Length: 265
Image 1 (cartoon, rainbow, N blue to C red):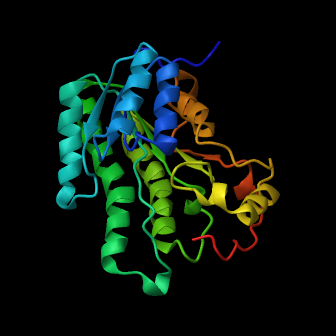
Image 2: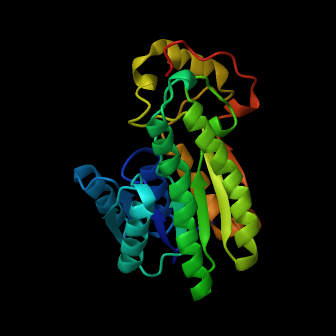
């Protein structure tokens, strides 16, 4: 029997493309209603909403910039979300940025932007929903989207790696705070998947060969590979799974890593 999310209402941040879009569509196919989020109101964003509605689910789009200082974007997203879909009971923190530089060239502005979107936004957006769920006695569910870079460091990705390491610890910390209140928190860490942000996979044959050789299952999949994992972690079947990070990387993190190609930045 397929896993079902029928009756659940989900906000997926950063869900107009890539991994977030794949997760949103997978959750909709499993029966959930979806609130799509992006930082731009454009045709691509609207098309995700249309795809979800064509599946027979309720859906709408919210535009909010989660990189704004002082949590202004977080507050805007939360207030608009509960106004549109008051019954939201599931949150997927997917929005993130990959603005990075080598460590010796890192500047404060770039570092803070990375932390603001990758760490601050999921931390405080989860807090806002958790406060609401506790008041309303809602059995909430939270999924954090991390990265294998939270475990496997790369010299040119210091801010990004640091932020994703923080997300992995955040999952455990929020679990012990929220599980006693009936809120389940887990995470998933994709390896490298094909998205609009990873065009090196399509354009660099040397890198494609490297990935195929050093991923045990030999595959660099589309972001759709993340959808099924998200459905499981948010489903009733995962009722006793709390505070865990599920690696969705074809076995890459189980393997001792050689150096990356010189042109992988």
